[in-house]
Image: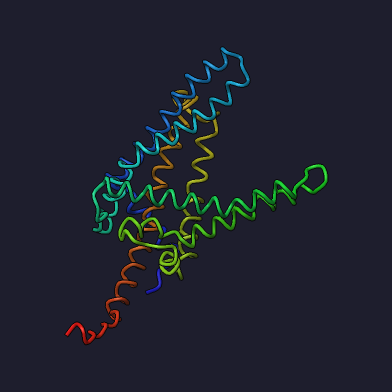
Length: 269
């Protein structure tokens, strides 16, 4: 059965309207709220110090805070994702929340390392070959964009890797590519539609002259965070629908052609 991009998109939008979505939105807004409070306190302190070197430490501290928030919110994200999968597809994660969190950490570490390996050659090429005073700016843009496009395509080619690890435990990049074969363009199309629908809303929320007074200066940021929470749920549903379809097809093929039995040797009797 052929599933169109539009039907995949509308499926994700319809099923986003669920109670569990409030959990994702709340988690996103709470994380953004922590950063808003952190920025208000630290920027006021750094402005009073009037020390340019102190701003570098602020950037490092912000990165550390980002990592800590990610680690603290990971179990909640795993629980909510399992509940979303159970509500829409009747398939929660087959592991407890703490084992699911460990699997999610494994996925994040492996994907980060893979992206680093992919982007490193582009960064080295840009550092050694690009000279702003000698070469065209277009050349520098190409050196930056091409590795990013390669990394993005590799990400889409292995887009089922994360859910494969969450549901099966042992799951490799080759299996992820096999699952994604024939589905990549449909997923890309659905995501493009999601971005096109939400982009005008983001632009309006960022346009301060039309914002109500109670949304200034940080209300718009928190509202955009809530929108990204909704977008994240729709994105998960896009991926999960095709993942379960691919997993069922792969399991059916394995059941239809079980591995050959090994004949017993003479020593086994």
